Length: 143
Image (cartoon, rainbow, N blue to C red):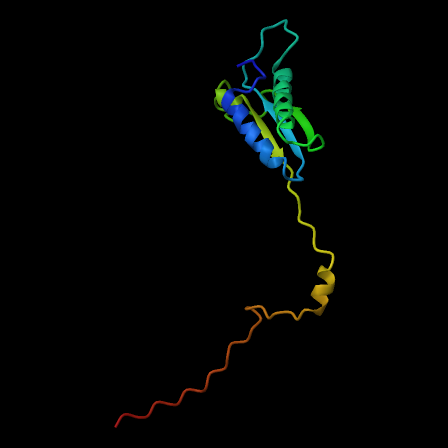
């Protein structure tokens, strides 16, 4: 509480994520959050600074553990404005960081248009006509 330092479990998780995400080209945003307990009056430090410091501490740790310098595009502090548990604003789970991984769309291969032009389209199941069945013979009258 009141600290930007990640606990040991948090450090372990951030390091593993950094090592795996560092292998990818995805961009990242790191967000810091606090619970709703305010700092004492007269201090020149608030939940805004704390949440930003938490996000920055996570960014530094990630960049020491294989995240590229250009992968992190944003470091944001939200203070107590995005509580995980809005009904319990002092709950410890509100004190956290969030890691946002940018989704990448896989580019089409350069020769996709050429291949599509020469390929024969397949008939969709909905477009296929049912096979014709021979006409049923009328039933013979009973003897």
